[in-house]
Image (cartoon, rainbow, N blue to C red):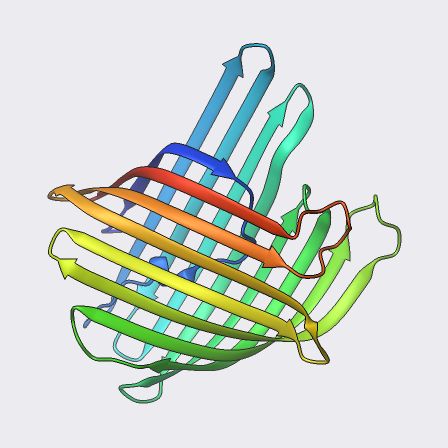
Length: 250
């Protein structure tokens, strides 16, 4: 693979947003090529607690003038004195097919688990159009309107809870490049059940990048997630994550 990104996280706190922000991973290209990223973090901390943390993030993308394939793998585990503070994983596969200069058709599949949110397995299959709302090189706006099937099995702490639902998945994304050194990428998702709009999820991800020098940038991102009907009443409806780090490309 000719292109590899190594993301070194300097500081992170919060909880899983549970929605993959594909917009921060898409890489426009006028010719067919492979790109990707990978990171692996390991921490062992001894203070008043024994803390173990491991995080793996990777994605691979193939893009040409008509089609885009993108795969994402994201795993995180953090334990303190034998208790899980974070234990989650997501695998996401997406395909885009260009219909016109402004319209693409998307299809995706996703599998995930989140022990803290008491989700033993959640599987998603979705498809729908993606619209390009602007052509300016300094700013780009996109709107996606998809329909997805969701299969969700709760953890063993909640007996016999399996849900099979149809949800809408509407997102609005924009990318802004106010200078050659600064990039801003933001995406917001709204995902209600088709037959019960009061059962919805909302998430938003915003990333800000400052180029320090060639191939090295400082990145800060904020993820916000709201689930109107979580798996259990013990799970908070609102979760968030703030991350700062360095982004190195070569």
